[in-house]
Length: 210
Image (cartoon, rainbow, N blue to C red; front, side):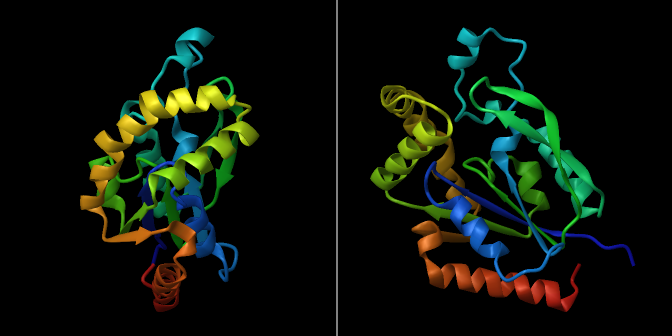
């Protein structure tokens, strides 16, 4: 019988701990069992715009994401087909020429602030999670990440947070909680929730559902 995969979606505000939870899920599993895909890889390519125009874009709005391509790739992976995931350059807001090949896995984990936004994507998901963390903690984490990993200035991060990140969180991200099967406070620090979900993943893999 042809193999397939199950899909777990993890959403939540910027800096909420989505990546930490996803990384916790991967622990204790062997190669080929669990793969983590970041929604950030699927930002739309803005190479057709000037740099000034790119910097003015709202990257926390659902329209910034290429949900169609993500849906296509996840559908292929779940049918046990290999795909090439885009590699995104956050300094230029464009897709790099190189991509990352992802082979099929028994369990696929997709994480990002808008992972539960698209209805077609939600239909593919077997488990939908929302990570909830206090706003001040999330901002501090975002500030640290953007300064260290994306070469942003402190003021630019603050301006973006106030003008787009915070209002988009209230308008689009936070309301997605209604679609979640489970809301997890404190992200990867919530060891009880992480252990419960990890146990569920193990049971799915061992039962040979896929």
